[in-house]
Length: 276
Figure 1 (cartoon, rainbow, N blue to C red):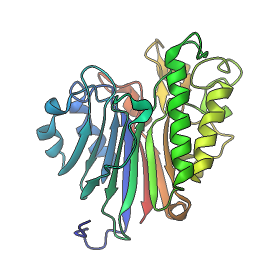
Figure 2: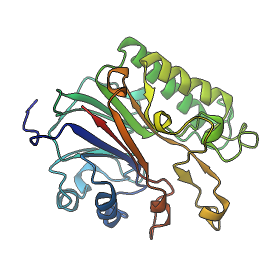
Figure 3: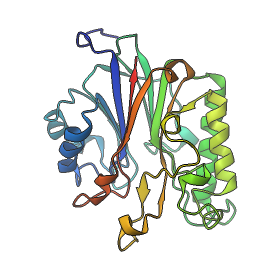
Figure 4: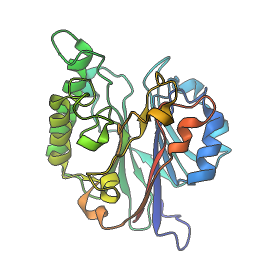
């Protein structure tokens, strides 16, 4: 891995955003860069085949290193970086579906390469029953595979980000009681996500800064007439770091105002800055 990191740059700013169509919302990336200035930006739900990814527009924002794994109409992930990145080629094809939900790279950093994983977990449909709803079964199977994978290779000098489509804690949703039987906060999903986190020894970087008894959301439904007034959010977007990086966590940003941008995604960007 090259070591041409800017002199004196001892921190890394990693942002994640479910952009909900990278071509439709490409103009919003400049607003994100202006406000967060990330070194690395991980996107989910790019909805874009690789041959149509807007590399020129992204490069104009300073992301000279780019990797995308996409498909027409749905899913898709991308990693945009101002630092050199190297594609990981040994990661699984989750559930053998080839549905463009994960991208892993090594990121050049002052203290040595950092392993970075960008995930887009299946949403799971509307019915929390794998027998009645194959999409829910796919979601659980995906997380189970990721858990086994993490257990076999505990996280070291690693970061995992993405839209995991699960809000695990009571205060990760606007109403714990009312959402217990709603996909994204059901006990079986929460247990699965917690098992994945434990298997890899991951540290929840957002809850590192925001105590578990405080509300924390990254997603607000398009169905709300006034999303800010109702504030019925969920924390579906996550940043996890390996224990050896947790001590370097310096700050976080949940860019809530992005939900109010013109043609906004229903998710907002999240960023963590850490010493590397």
